Image 1 (spheres, rainbow, N blue to C red):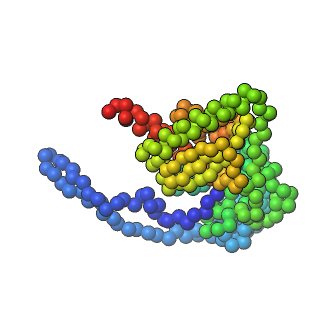
Image 2: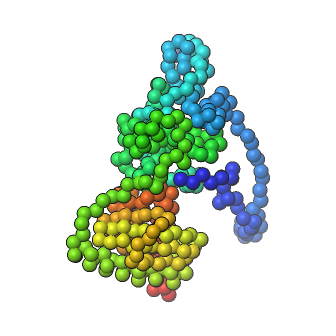
Image 3: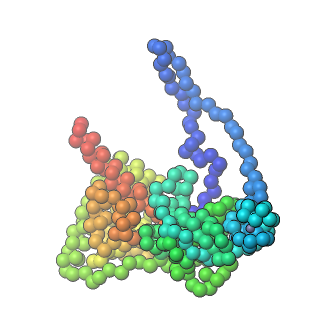
Length: 335
Ligand SMILES: [Zn+2]
């Protein structure tokens, strides 16, 4: 998970200095990009204690009605509308809770959340609270896929190490993935969780046929990788990207090297890869690289496992690599 600093206006939304000509009623007019700046500061108002509690004290606050005792999280009311506006007071609630429903998972996020995807988003009822808080959800076991967090799943609140006072300063993971001590700990930090200890899927023993298929698939992938490295267009898909990926399959292991346009596959084990991919059948990856079905889909449908959530970005790039090569080949044919 990345905690990179974000600008108020993301770079991609800032237009370049340029102009164009538009023709209206046979007359040309020059149209230039220009700018007008309006920035503002938004007060968290009555919710300030809630956000400051998260930012400074790693606490989750709710408000408790002095009459009916209902605890609402976040503390959105200073007075209870159910009790003839009886005053409420701030109380701390627990940092474990139960999912109110099965959360949908976002794999393709808007640019605002792209550095946080994939993530689940759902409502959790925290201990001693009566209303549900909307939170982001992750797993420590790689990519969040359907079935890991459902309605009724016990989850634990985790605080990001760098907090700015926003609801995205916190997220939840299944309590079953943590040690009892971590579950009990108040203000558990993201850095206190071992994100690398994700569980790789176990594969059955390979047959001789599997081993032969593996060798064949790796050879085909190597040939494809060589073509990609020579394709101007395909190179653009992995421009500026560098990753050493260990790929584990039922019948053997190989390494993928992405290095600023160069793409290489070698049949060897890697000691300290940037991340690990695991798929029982290497054809899953071969098909993806041949642009027959997407690698992204293989992750979502659990055919391909990856060890780090944020490396979903790399999977996108591999899909783009395959697509760009096919596009270039088609263009060449058309010429
Ligand atoms: Zn009340």
